[in-house]
Length: 150
Image (cartoon, rainbow, N blue to C red; front, side, top):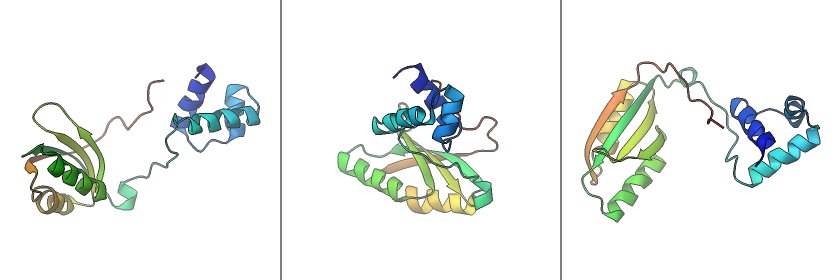
């Protein structure tokens, strides 16, 4: 990967819908050169997906929360079952494993507080591998998800 490839990645992180022509103009390359470079970055796995960022409020998701989950057991079967539950749950947008007291950190989106309450009390807490759940409701997000520092 050279500096031109890095610049393509920087540009695409800001707007993944850019055409080869637009990339070429920004990089002083022909559209075909820019398109080939982009295709190579995609084929090599540098670009995992091209997605749209949807406005959560406009689609009825007004509550964002971070949920910390402490496991009762770290037995492999229970942990796998819990991860399958998280994969199948559409309100869970992302999952991280952590060091420290909590084993997992979940980023969740819900339509309202009642939906968050349902997720916590009827989906997460009843799982046999879960010992404790603690949630923090996001009040504001002064800095939005930003591109990687390339």
